[in-house]
Image (cartoon, rainbow, N blue to C red; front, side, top):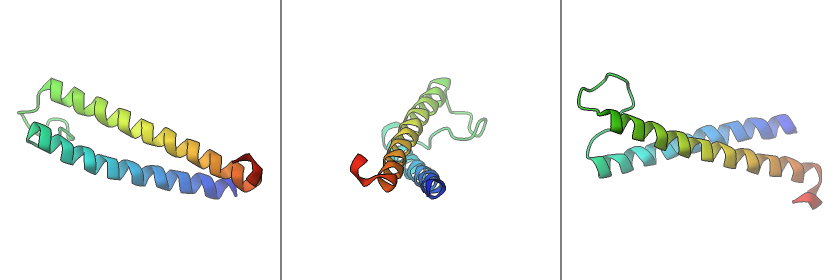
Length: 86
């Protein structure tokens, strides 16, 4: 059962990060007015400040999502083993 929970957690984490990335991209476009700097060397008008801001922003959000999903799946695994521990 733990393997199923771990696989579900991995799937949830990937899906949540993909959705968050779409939302961050849309927010970036509204605030900055152009696509985020996702591909190194793709555009000449990306500043170092923008590149670093995008890197920090996406890292913080994806890490928070991964930790949240991990905590939730641990809680789900515990409740499957012993429903009184919820």
